[in-house]
Length: 310
Image (tube, rainbow, N blue to C red; front, side, top):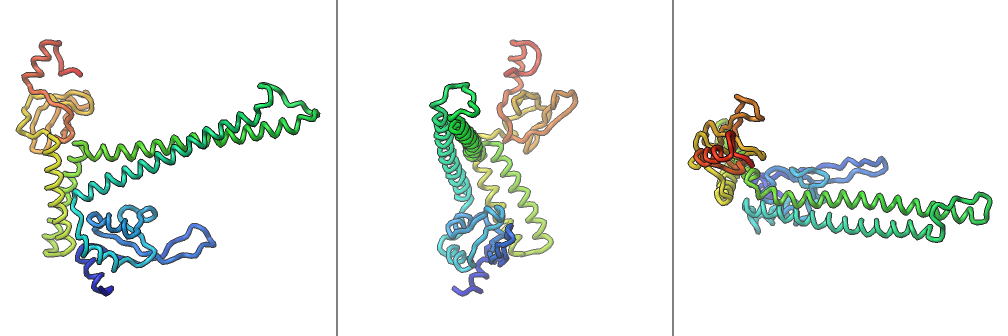
């Protein structure tokens, strides 16, 4: 495959490779060539990672390579094709899990370094009685001061290692939480709304520039995303307008609210922020629980006036 053929194939799939130069932060370090891949990246992220692409310095919307990857990417696309949205989500979960594992291992190493430094700190002054002052002019003065310095230095290293272990553990927990977040109904609903907005934008673009290849790809991706996230929401058991009626109660952000209007994509609740007359629209994917009007009324009669409790 020639370079021109590879460039044509990448253009067909919405990818662009641009040659650039690095901007070194150190004055003595010379710039070097770098190739940036941008455009429609999501269906090809696994391929770009496998080819050695990195996003650390260029952001998630650009992959960087030290050598021109045009032909390698084109050959990979011909061999593997485009990744489905299911595969793209699985790749995100896999990389989040790998990142959490790396952070956990580094945190464990830091905890070991913390414990070792702590023991060194105590061992440095093991032969000195607690509270023993430095005897100025005594033959033990030099040894005593050096022992205190070693103990202080080791304790500082222990504290620094402990702080690093805490930061790494928090990062590991954050990466694990990302996987759980991507399984929540609220996340699925947000992705569906994003896909619907992208479809509307693509349709507006095509109305202005008919048969534009980039906008056709955007429309294709948006329609595939809508189908995927709609199916995921159905599997998650998200409520629909058929499940709701005016006067029902829903639980949202830990509180119960009365439904005053049922909309195609949301319900309108009253007493938002506990202010009389204020309303708010809650997407179906963000409803935490639901009680029909009859059930809520029965509970109110049993427990006293007011909305459902708990």
